[in-house]
View 1 (cartoon, helix red, strand yellow):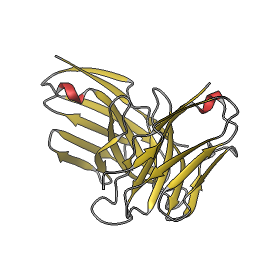
View 2 (tube, one colour; view 1 turned 120 degrees about the vertical axis):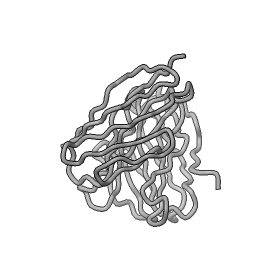
View 3 (spheres, chains in turn red, cyan; view 1 turned 30 degrees about the vertical axis):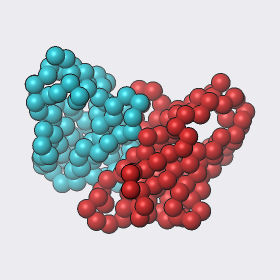
View 4 (cartoon, chains in turn yellow, orange; view 1 turned 180 degrees about the horizontal axis):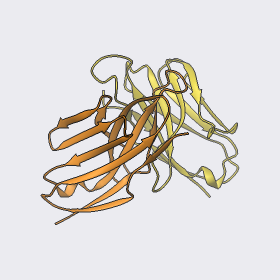
Length: 116
Length: 113
C-alpha cells in the first residue's frame, strides 16, 4: 500500500460549476477525514467518517458541500455551484482505530482547486 | 473556543538548534501533534504528546505542558531539507469521539547555510 491517494491532483473550474474529488485511504483504515487548506494557513477540519458513517461535519461545510463514503473505503467530496472562495487545497487523511499508528493521521497529496 | 498560536516565520542556520513554540486553548484536549509540510506537499507526522514531558525521536523532540497549554518542537543539527512549515495541531474530542485535529497556522522555517 502506497498511502492515501487523491484524485485529481489539480482542478480548475468556472464559478457555478460542480466538482467532485475522490480519496482512497490506506486500506484497513476505518477513519477518514477531509480538511481544507488555504495559502499560509493550517488545514481546517471539514468532515469525518468512521467506516461509512459520517459522524461530524464542520460549520465550514455549507449545504453546497457533501461528502460520502458509501462502502467504508473510498470517499468523495462534492462542491456544488462553486464560488471563488472555495479555491483551496482539499486534503484527505485516514487513520486506523487501533495499533501502533492509532494516533496518526496520514495525509494524502491533496487536490488543489482553483475557481475562476 | 479553540485557539492555537505559533510564530509565523523563523530563520535558523544549518547545523544549529531551533525551538518552535505553540500555545493552545481548547476544550476536549486529547493530544498534541506536530506535522511537517513542505511547500505544495501533504503534511507528514512528526510527533505526538498526550502526557506532560519530552518525547524524543532522532533529531526531533517535542515537549508538552498541559497545565500551561504549551508545547514546543525542537529540531537539532538543522539541515537545509528541514526548511518547511511546521504545524502544531490539537486533537479535539469535545464533539465526541471524532479525533479531529485543530491546526495552527504553521511556522515557516527557513534554514540558511
